[in-house]
Image 1 (cartoon, rainbow, N blue to C red):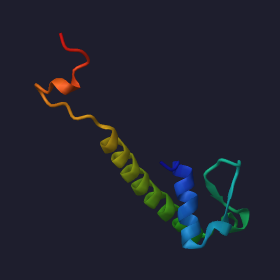
Image 2: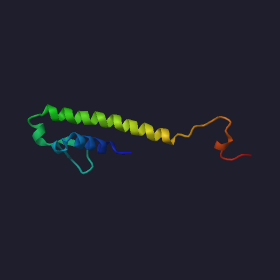
Image 3: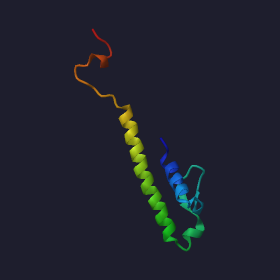
Image 4: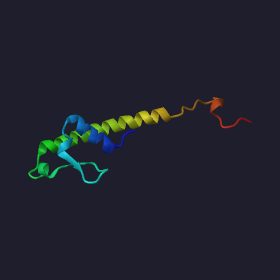
Length: 86
């Protein structure tokens, strides 16, 4: 499963706007570069928010799929799920 940060960066790349952003640290979320902050560029900010919203939905979906794959369904009376039989 991808990290949330990686999903956001990947979506910015897919949108073709990754060069408008930088990471404050090597493993940081995207931050608009200074020239898009002063003067404030609402379009760049909206693109970032769009990428974050999409990443949130993708991450939620990935998490749900991972949980579903790892759930063991308990069937009452199914002895194959018992640890030991007497």
